[in-house]
Image 1: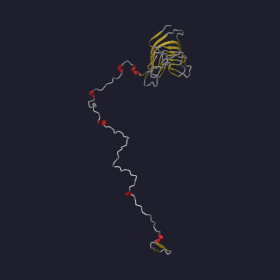
Image 2: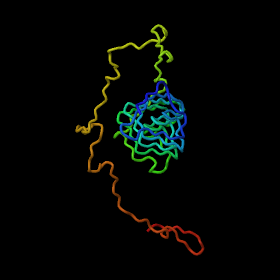
Image 3: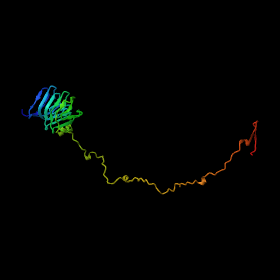
Image 4: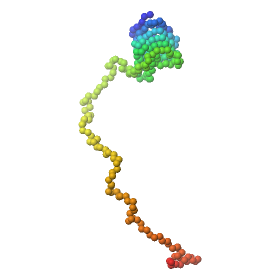
Amino acid sequence: MADITIPGSFSIPKFDGSFVGNPASPRYTITYTHNGNDMAGLFGIVGSAATISHLRVSANVTGTAAIGGAGAIAGWNDGLIENVTVLSSSNISGAHWVGGIVGRNGTDGRIQNSTVETGTTLLVTIMPASGIPFMGWVSGINDNPFSSAVIGNTIPPFAPFTAFLPLFLLDDDEEDLPAIKEPEEDEYPDIKKPEDTDEEDESSNIKEPEDNNQEDEKPNPNEPEENDQEDETNKEPDFPETSAPPVEDYFDLGDSGNESEKPYE
């Protein structure tokens, strides 16, 4: 069977059958372009009973939906995809799930013994409702919990190139973009521009005093000199110690209680 080139934008919305290419080598190539909405690819959705195997594709797929998948074989896969090759001339872009083979691999999806050649381009575009995008060489996101579901595949040895671009930048029509108008010089006459001056601010020339950690060795004449000797003029005089006579020496306290003065002896 010869190679197939499909003109225009082509995709099978949903597939539940068996699509087997040429098991022998060389395998034929399907070249196609698809500008899709929610599920973009050669097949939009691959059902759980479907089998796709032994073919090569050169795909130019663009998914434009905010929530959707884009892949060279399918936007969403719940069937078996095996022994397929995505050629290096392929370009896959979308806004949510972007994969080299499928955009999203469902809980029943299996992708085995397939190849994504080095040079395949994956591109994610930003849309406000897309949320977090997912991208991978085999599938953008994999929901199948079994490790044997996605196995034996050959992918490029480096991570896929991620480019986040606003979707309107992909439009070549520049007339749709709003023009940015810059204000003219005479539009705001009341606003004065500051004049440039070469003179430096005088306040900036004020130098701060330098810190001097060395103490001034010169004595301060206003401070009194320390003298270890006490000032004799301020010293109190020493008086001899005296003892006062007892009270009984002044008064004779008799039984009657009359006090009789007694001369001091």
